[in-house]
Length: 413
Image 1 (spheres, rainbow, N blue to C red):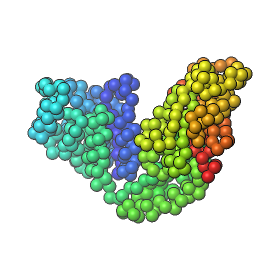
Image 2 (cartoon, rainbow, N blue to C red):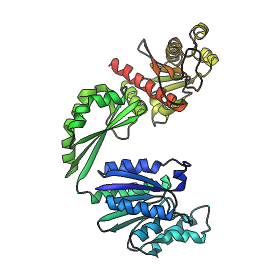
Image 3 (cartoon, rainbow, N blue to C red):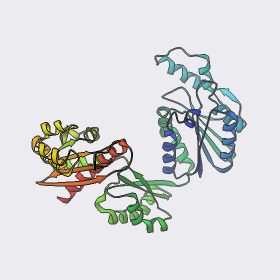
Image 4 (cartoon, rainbow, N blue to C red):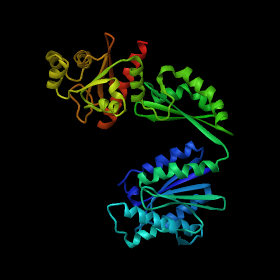
């Protein structure tokens, strides 16, 4: 089946908000095996919205619209969709009761008259309860086409899609779709694409798709089959081949596992403790690690030594090192890692120092970062040159040092 996404809202067109709904819905539709050829953003204009919806129905089996279901006059999605499908709006007693209950349990207990607009639904539709707001979701079926209306706020849209819309769409698919996300680190997207070009060229079922992340590459392997067991059987040779080609660069085949989680698992399995010593990242590495429940099993301490004085006082970096080589140098990163491990009594210490910009320093360009890992009486230092703005450079550095940590542990295995 072919699906199409229409995001409604002038605020999206003007760039006032980021359209995260489209990314979320596109990914979920891919998991369902739905083909998406078009995504559209249209403002709060009745004529343009109607034209957009009519065009979508001409070329797609399922059209998902998000936004424009609120109580105000410029919320026109439901009214427009009903008119396009030739449905009149009728009051839904159940939705009215849900709205009453919502306001009864909220700080804003008074219901204004325009809120009852949200209890009006297209005749003959399927109403989907909104457990996080007042606008119900709506499913309309006509002439082998399906139109799905979802509220705009992600906190309302995502739970509704997960709980009700995803299962509904899965039932409409004649086949089972099964996917595995293969996550790699320490390798570029171009290198990965080169290594799997033959697999991509020959793919049919299962299929393979690449997704570039900061410092990572994810490969989604997807199979269509009559049941999940058969889908897994079809995927097995492809997954085995990816393991053969990428080896330890694959850190997980778990959709939900992150790089930091995999690193913590490695430390836990080997009963190793970790300390971080950060300059340019200002504690971002420690934050990512300690966001994971149970990190305290292995994470011992985090140093944030942004200034030279802090590097000297907390990590015993030599004054002569900072004077002769500078804070952004291989030697400084090495001393930060070595001394951080010694001072904290950890098995491992990883360190980062660099320039995130926007200003360069003499002969040191923005994006120059040194990462280091002290482990088992050996210190590994790596010079990196990251591209992008300040935030991207810092994020790249975090992924880079976690990848280095992982590599050092694996080398010692």
